[in-house]
Image 1 (tube, one colour):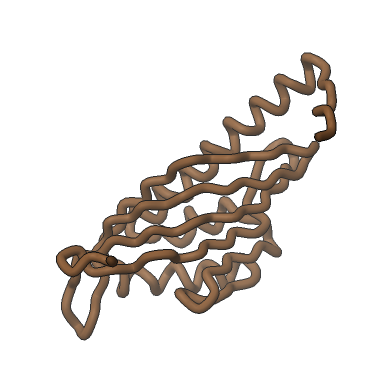
Image 2: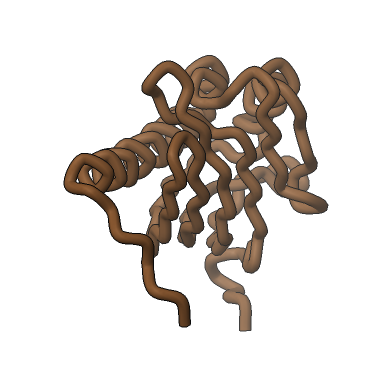
Length: 155
């Protein structure tokens, strides 16, 4: 195994400050999602050319306007959500970073015109960039592992 690169004190502080800023960015994203998917607040956290990708579960959207349009409409399908983010692993390399997170999300989804209590478990794989000293999402990929009705379970 290769030895980790030795960092100066200033580099260590920047790395730790960046990790904390990225955690705060992710928390602001979750708070905006939990605020009825506040589209303007969400897209402000992304670069102009960002990608939000949930594959077959919810689709892929490129650029702020496409991301905004998606989030402006999703609150009609997911009428309540509590994004509970866990297990951050964040790697910083200068003005770029990657981060993985786990999501447990109790939510209410409209199914056949009726609200239904559900549990969603997902993983996030994110790429971040620092622009003018501010960390932003460049690519957010969410993989839905479980999306199950509350009473029926997933086993």
